[in-house]
Image (cartoon, rainbow, N blue to C red):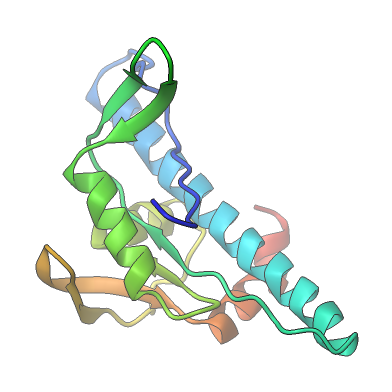
Length: 161
């Protein structure tokens, strides 16, 4: 994974209650991931402003978020065990991160739709087509550039989320 950080949202255990309850859990997880991404980029912008005022170089991060079915659990050996997630959906999230604009967030179509249903994102983010390494052309990914991150985190409606 190099110098990246991976976080996953949603528990491996279903809550029970049927398909509608499970889909709501997935929606909440996607919305939580997007909220976390926006908060991270907002904090990085604050840190960068401070660092630049001190004559230091800014540090930019990219965030990619995908929603899907993964394999989750303790993986490894008796010497090194890690609770993690693996699978094609994890790989796609990493490719989205690589394709994101520095200071921005790049969302897979399903993540955008789920977070939008939870009221985290506006309905007018324009999609774009991105070529993801090892995956190919991915239509309908949703970039949130730094200027939109700032708008979303300073709008009055975001304070209630």
